[in-house]
Length: 284
Ligand SMILES: O=C(O)CCC(=O)C(=O)O
Image 1 (cartoon, rainbow, N blue to C red):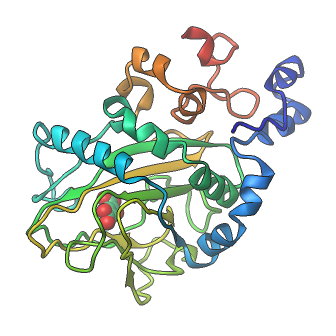
Image 2: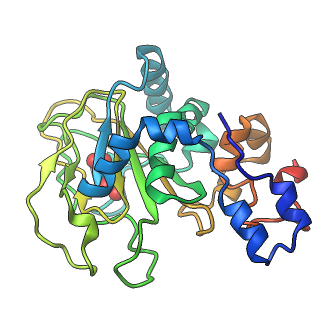
């Protein structure tokens, strides 16, 4: 799937701080122009509305494996420490190191094509955590996901969050509340636009720009609502989760190359992330 429009070795042979090397390296993408062209409507929708749903991406077998894996981890995961994490909710952090069934989600070509198309940059995974809300959990406060990058607003898109419903998302069990078009707000204040709900079957992917105002809904049903949330950002930013430390090196060795790259084992631009002047993959 990896299309290399630029050869990183070429960039190394050039002055890495020079414009030529950096322009060359910055063109590298995981997905091909054709893959992104196929997702043009969804990329356009994400830009305009701030969110988009890609339906039907996971097979029943894959969903079953994810449910089994999550249920095992739920047995050893505490409930949230704050109203934001949710006192009737569980967040399993560090999923890339704990559940190989998540790797395929992280590298899903349609999702990557939309994320790369939207950010128009080299990307990486920033965090991979579950958000499972149990019966009785109240709605979260509306928030944006990228406010910890305190660069001042407005800024161009820098991150995309991707929620994978592992159970059907319904109004009554906490389907995500989204505020369409709120991602272009010029400051850090809630713009107070009308909201809607991301009601969609399990196995879809819900993508939103990191600046979109949104929240987990209340779970008024009698069953758990499980989801996995993967956040991507521009490859030269610091990741939200420290994936270098939270994914054991032996686990990294077992990952497909594209997943190694997504969790940060790669050189971005001509220089960001080198170890002794070379790709960190050499240290594996
Ligand atoms: O699970 C959801 O519906 C949204 C969760 C969320 O926005 C968060 O935990 O930051």
